[in-house]
Each structure stands twice: as C-alpha cells, then as structure tokens.
Length: 326
Ligand code: SF4
Image (cartoon, rainbow, N blue to C red; front, side, top):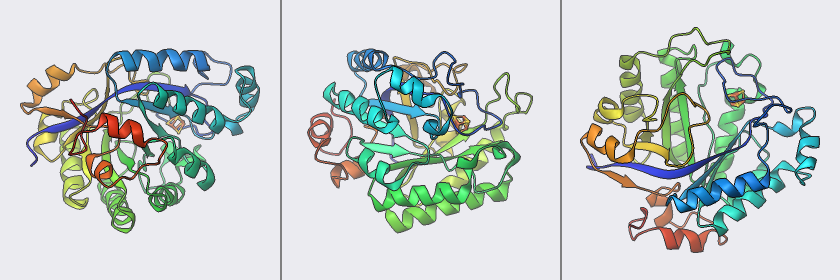
C-alpha cells in the first residue's frame, strides 16, 4: 500500500448532453432543444476561469456519445458558430490549456483520426467499458456494444493515450460478467500499457429513468468488486472509487487507491444528487493523507506520454515524481 490516496482537482464541463444512446439508467442525456443541451463557448470559458481561480489542474470535458448523429444537433452547433463538434472541442481544449488547465476528455466512441487529433490537446482520456455483457440496460445504446468499446480502448493504447476506464456495478450484470470485464481490461493493459486507472462505479438510480426503481448495489457487492479489481488488474493500474457516491473508507481498505476527479467548482453532472465531499473532510474520513495528482498519472508524466502542445503545462504543474506540484 502506498500510504496515501490520490485525487485530481477538476472543473466538470458537460460540453453537450445530447447523445445517440439511450441507456436505461441515464439522467444526463438531454434533447437538442432542452436546457443544457449544448454549452456555448462563453459558458465554457466562464467555467474554465472558475476552475483556474479555484486551483483546479484538470478540465474534465464530458459529453454524450456521437451527438452529431442526432437530428438538429448540427443546427445548434452552427448557432454557436461551429461546423464540427470535434473542432469545437479542440478549441475549448486549447483554451483550457491556455488558462492553465489540463484537458481530460470522455468522448465516447469516436473515430481513430478524431482520437489522434484529441490526443494532442489532452493530458489523458477516458471511456467506461461498463461491462462486457449484453444487457437490457443497453438495448437502445449502440455505442455500448462491448466489442466496440474494447476496440476503442485498444486504439487509445495504440496512440499511447494515458487512459481511464471502468465498470458499472448494478446495471444487471452478474459476478462473472464483472470478472470477465476486469479481465478484458487487464488484457488490453498488458498489450498497450496505457490504462492508468479503473473506476469501480456503483449504479445510482435517477428519477424519470427506466431504472429509477432498481436498487443500487449493496455495500458488500462494491467491496467485493473493488477486491476483485485489485486482484485481477495489474499492479500499476489504480482502482478508483467515486467518493460522492459511496463512502470510500472501507473500499480503500479493500484496495482502492484513487478518488478520481473532485470538483471544488461544479457539481457532478452525471450524479447531480450527490455532492462532492470536502477534500479535507475526505482525508479525515479515510484516515489517510490525500495526494493530488494531475489527470495524467505520475508514471505517464515521467515517461512523457504527452504531446508537445501540452508539454509546457505538464512540466509547469508536475513535481519530480509526476504528481501535482504543491
Ligand atoms: S452513453 Fe452516457 S450520456 Fe448517453 S445515454 Fe448512455 S449514459 Fe447517457
């Protein structure tokens, strides 16, 4: 055990909530004409400014998958002055870098050429595998096809992108599905060496969704999942748990070593009902010191897994070990 638990201080930017999928548990997705469907550039810059003023090091760009295939999205994008969503994302990422924040983008499944383009303006990227099982919860979500997601995670490995993935617990998968999912992630990491962390995330029911009446997983199930992850994943892959969704103390005792991005500026837009705990309070609750990292893990900082465009900022923000400079 390393004697401390890591986290990243981030500002959460839900660039668009429009999505081609319809997951049965999703409370994030919006229609193209609904409020919050697409953030304009002015709003993004406002969030980045708040993040920079609050000493955040990470700009977390999260959005629905392939919003451009949804009817009407192109018109909304044109209204804010952009013809391509990836162009808009690159512009926002460059602004983040200029303001001293390292982008980490959860882009959903995108093309290899878009992924390569995004690598140059991202310190790290992510895509939840969620599960290798074919589940009812994903019946209307073509992008949640496990083989497609695993292929995408491999492509990120080919491009040497420090990568975050994870599994979702309690969406209808079985224990053997969880084991299979973790083994699949471990295999990809052994080939490409790019998985920096695996999130073990508990399903949390959202009002108005198909799964609103489903029970979240038991604490014992989460402990079991974290223990499994720690025993299946290679040692250099961190196990992450979200401290606003579950009390992390016992999960840390079972092998979790990272608390993910904690925002001092914005809510968790995926789980808006779950406020972030205060960082000082978390350390007290866990009974272990917290150490701030960048969105890119120390090992990948030391091994220079980043583009020339992002290099000056990483060098400015990191200490000799690759953690955030204090
Ligand atoms: S892919 Fe993400 S945003 Fe889209 S419906 Fe599923 S959970 Fe919601």
